[in-house]
Length: 237
Ligand code: G3P
Image (cartoon, rainbow, N blue to C red; front, side, top):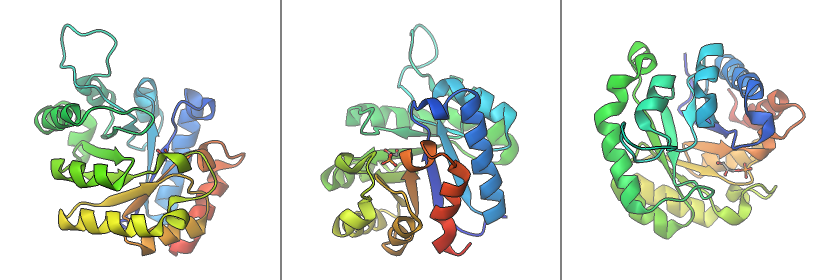
């Protein structure tokens, strides 16, 4: 049973430590710790790893990106129906490492609303829907994109991504403002960039974030399991 609404998203990016069988290993760690701590810890994997992770673990993966192309005469795109069929239960959109225009975000959100649940046998079995987190680099972008009403908004200042100075420590005012913007629309805010310690996570929670989006601190760690545990310690769960 999940005790806390606070969520941890672990973005595997294209790190070698987070793809193929390594993706399975990391996803198992997310599953194990999620069960132990009664928290939602979501592996966010590359499209090519969704099926493998879904098949080899009990965890429900998210994908890092999808494109807007429908099923049919389109080549080389990440198709919503395909990732849903493979077992993904959510996606990031507009990550600062994969930006897309607002019109395309709108288009994808519309498609998700129509097709995602119907085609996802895993989602149907588990009574889950396919969720979308729209990532924002700035507060201005957040103010605009919150109106599209995705399931989550993420605030990640790009200059802090991959570093060891976290968004919660470096930009507390911006995080608080982002929380206020999201609350107006009843939208959960997730924060990310440079998060690497229990204190960073606790700070984000205290400021009103509903979760964190982490990557390098976990994926590149010599002991990802210990790293995630350390990040959760101060949450008292
Ligand atoms: O999507 C999460 C990410 O951009 C943050 O990366 O390495 O700063 O935790 P990192």
